[in-house]
Image (cartoon, rainbow, N blue to C red; front, side):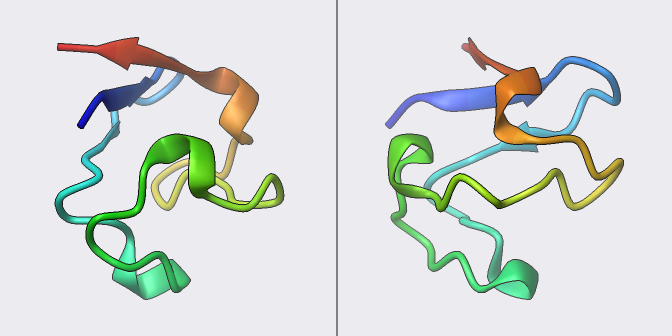
Length: 53
């Protein structure tokens, strides 16, 4: 699955890991994360992420 980079801080959302601390289960595609989810490192919204390798 596609990974996504938080442009402001460099955090990478990896769907294989999810974001368990925010209630996002491993295996959750970025597109399936709720729109109100924010970066667990810097707090910006999903609109500040872009696809990465």
